[in-house]
Length: 422
Image (tube, rainbow, N blue to C red; front, top):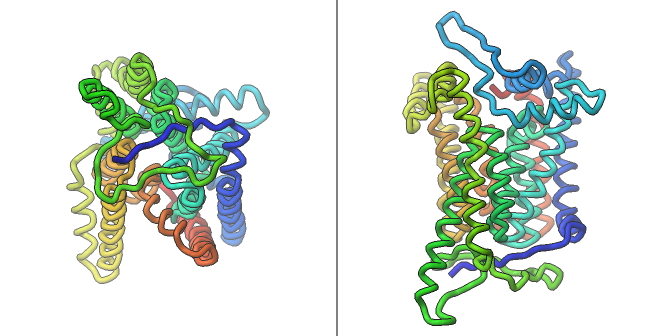
């Protein structure tokens, strides 16, 4: 059985424990920004503009400044409405602008930078809880050196969403159901993929109730306690304390009152459901009105058919064939990492969350160039790699991460000075 012990650490202690990960993350992001500034200056472009006034960041800024109701009608009949963009990031931009001299765009940049640190801490907290401190540090650094990691420093919503998702998952793993539900609701106000966080909370909560119901019918001592859920798996990785200062508290998450779990489950979908229903009311098209808004952007869920056609079309030319092979290899790697996570016995909410994020990213019917960015919140995919790095010699792990960080910084500057993230 895989038991996830509840650990409640004082904030200063938790911050000290996460400090190496956060410092490493800040160093990687600083390297990426420095390379971007130098690269942009060489091309006579403004790095500040690239970070605050490209694609989605413009739409978020417009929502913060003017509210909803703006749309662009294209010659082909498509309608791009700003109702497609969820409101939490614009709300934060508006609030920071109101209490500071920052412009809406700069407020968005500050929010994203702070959220990226919160996200890094959340990624560390989850990985540390499951696999230990070294794996937590490696997971954060791997998330930082993703090829499109520069998005974490842009006025986009990926960092904010990842922060809310990671801490919601951590709250589930440690039995804080009301916190988990509240953060899931906020994640649902940030991006459509907030449904993945809701699904994770619900899966964990239902598993907890089912397990408790089964154990109630067993003789005393017949059930394993110590987590909000557990499942048998050969070779499963058991989370355990790495030192005395990180000893799990002997308070099982299953011991949380049922009403707290139920309330957490009720809170989780309120953000996403509330915004979707509001859009449907505003557009006059009912509960599914948000799908019509997305259709105006030619965005939807088709099970991956359009993406498969996009990849297949790459093989009509020799240069395109290499790109097609790279895309196939990338998708195969994502699937492989997910399978390894399952075999290693990752906790149920992480598997559910990662599966939904991955499915929504790979099976969207448009914006194929955005898929690496859309996969960024699926940080549990990095846990098998983090565990491998944690087990390797420190010098070897540091050398690998340093090399990848340099390559990521160069690629991010090149990418953002080109087409950038749509």
